[in-house]
Length: 84
Image 1 (tube, rainbow, N blue to C red):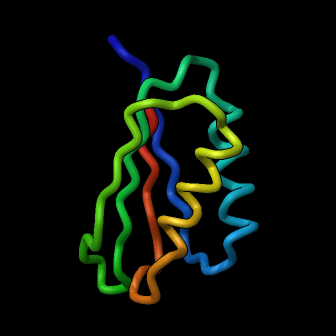
Image 2 (cartoon, rainbow, N blue to C red):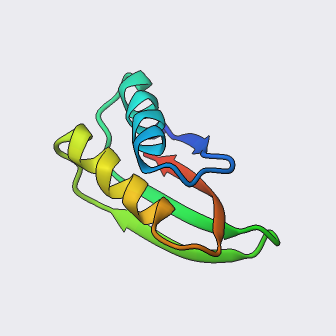
């Protein structure tokens, strides 16, 4: 059985703090990260967009990409990050 973990960003619009939170979450995991899926959610609770990363190498770069995806849209207020 493969390991999985989920992180919710809560309300966020600060790129640097979002990147730090995501990076801390990724560093906390004790297994090799095979893929990451991020879902952005609107304030009304509606799914806005989904993005997947199948190849995970540099965690700092990945955290930056994830944070940019999360923060990059005004109508989005929260996101969930699923790591496998």
